[in-house]
Length: 233
Image (cartoon, rainbow, N blue to C red; front, side, top):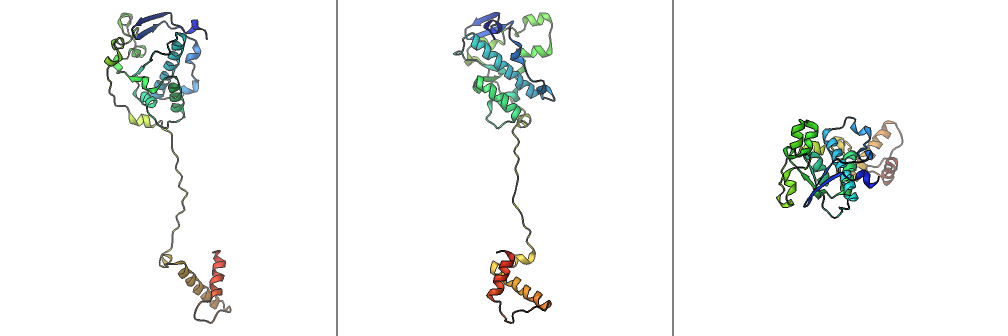
């Protein structure tokens, strides 16, 4: 892209404010994949508008060598503004675009403007030619002509549900195994007691099968070892 393609034909400078009109720009500035518009939400579209604004401002700042001049961005899209300003783990769509916006300009340069002061709204609402000539769409709201200290402090209440909807989903998998212990098992206080109980059970089974069994009244070490070997412990 050459300078003639991105430099605006008309520049009006007033102190720290520069108004742009009749912008000549290459179409690739506004190129967005068609898939982005399939079932896309309004907050996502507003975020895309912020991306386009950042790209366009970057071209203008570069072409006019205004890198040392602070550049502020104003939007009435409260959800998109929160995505840009907050440090959260966003989903792929929002994260990629927020990362691009921040790579061009710091999040602190993004400000909120009430809808009634936003001159960009006229593009979607329409107006008569007479109203357009008198409207602030050409030069922006009046407060931009003042120093930044005099800019309005806008307070807004964003839709937290829409904001959280774009947070990266967390999948938690619980791999713990819960073993249901029978009631009789709970009555046995130690492993050695369990071994003795099972050894006596084995004696009883062998007696029913008429197999040779130990005639002692106490369990032998051999019986305990055989049971441990059978259980793999």
